[in-house]
Length: 271
Image 1 (cartoon, helix red, strand yellow):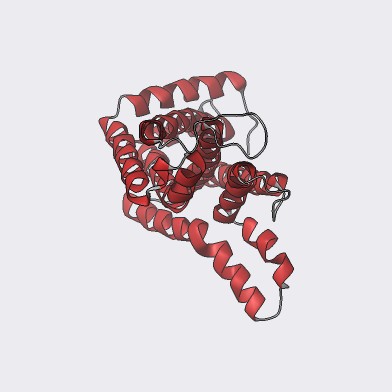
Image 2 (tube, helix red, strand yellow):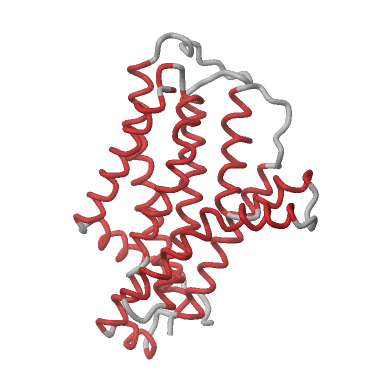
């Protein structure tokens, strides 16, 4: 795998940002995400009590929806380039495979991060206008409910989305057609969503894993890492819990490892 070239990475990043932002489909995608998040916020009812209860309402929907958005942004990018013959040109000219993958990830990742933040904003405003006074005091000490908790939640959701985006790029590099890319993306989404949880429970039932090790085993998967980080950095902070079941560093390392794995797989399989 060829080395990264900073100039090429920046050029590809700028190209991808322009490509995605000019695509009306991406706008519709994030608008739909915003509408769904507001709907789940309203249906959950936690918005009248504060930010942490709203995070509880959105915890599972975000775990399912944000990766879907990320996959939609990345599952066809290299398939389309291959069909247009662009990859064949890049094979003989700069930039390198690593630079193309890195630039594509950075460009689409920036759009994803901004899109998730904007899509979450209406839910945040909904909490503000619906507050019944139970969380009117915003304090810096541990245990206080505040918008900062919601911002942390959005940040963790973005990290999960970046994992899914890296996986989508790997799928796009491996697939040779749009149909196969869709199938691979759906399979990978299922693995990211429940794969580690099912594996950990199976290991527990067969006696291969002790009950005390279950939280750490679940965090090995992206979904478990996301939930662990939300509990450690948002919900435990709001309830003044003294310790989390899993250290935040473990969740961060898990998400970083999955992201790196996806990008390496994409670079290796690109040609």
